[in-house]
Image (cartoon, rainbow, N blue to C red; front, side, top):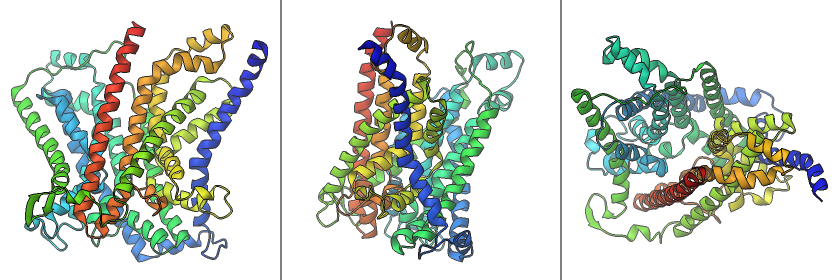
Length: 555
């Protein structure tokens, strides 16, 4: 029996690699291929070649939307990245009281859909907002002012996470040497801090740029007459049923993301490690004037972000903003809106299924691609497919799902509009970040475990279950939390494949706002924020408990 099992092990290993490769092709590769093929077709189904693309590029409305999207993305990126860099530098290179709390407050927008900021802006500066007069110009809030502020709120925590990581790898010995040589604070910043954070700055800029150019939520609420590509692709696919033109616009959205991804890879290849085995953690020396300014800046930014998030939450309990400020929970009844509590319940189910499915698939896929020693070409392709979703915006992936899974000739077309396909789409959309997280954890496990197991004739799946899984369990829980929160808050990909039979909370916020029921939209967004925060705390507690247990095992 043992001999048969060992003889079958290479075949089973190859089968696992090919199975996971097939799953990624089904969830990511084939929908993108359908998008490319549809962009080269006419509405009658004939081959159009580059004619369809030329037709779109000659349409003034679509080229204007492209220009608006690029202008907005550049503006927000140039605003967000310096401020996020200043925030991260203040937390790590100055003595800021309550730095950990300020960090969590600044990252709190990650728990909310992008529409939450836009709804809060409407309450404050919209046509009935108390501060409407502060936003001058034609259109007031609606247009570039609202888009810039809303996208700032949405993208700031993403840039902050990257910059905190980049600045957190500082070697304290370099600063000690610089001070010993008489270099002042500005000299240290220009010659040590800034060069070491160059890669993080470029990465943050590219991430913010991609998020802005592909975001659907903020432009939908406060875009006004400013047309952007994300809105145009929705109009073409859903509004006008012009799938071929929608595919071309989807490719226009995909191109900046691909270019940003390639630029990030080039920068990564040129980046040198700043943290070595001999490095010492950087501890900023006391500097009262610097610390006062850093503390004031951090508190101002964090409080503005939390305030913008809190306005929507508070307004959801106001009877009629801003005329009747009595408290009520009537907006949480959702009696007169489509979806309502059913949409919220569906989002909970979908997020739970995404967390469970995504964590299992990502962990096993990372194990097969990184720890097995068979089918090297297939494993390389598996790693490439795992990294692909990072360069594919949610809107583009959603359009690909429409073309592929809604095709009558596809035997899987029965999945379209159902909960299962939404789970698959969400896992595929956020796969890369989760995959990189698990791969990082796997690299901390010495390969001698596999070598010893092989010498003892132990099958690879036994080693994964008894060694790799327990060691990586805290990381797997973190990945599950990431999938859950992302599934609760994402809009872009699911807006194309959601159906009236299975409504979702994040998408229903758009429906409520379109119907003029902003209070109900704020209430639903507040439920999403509260749920995401609660689940984050629960996962953090579970991860802490497991971490203590594993720490005792390692000791």
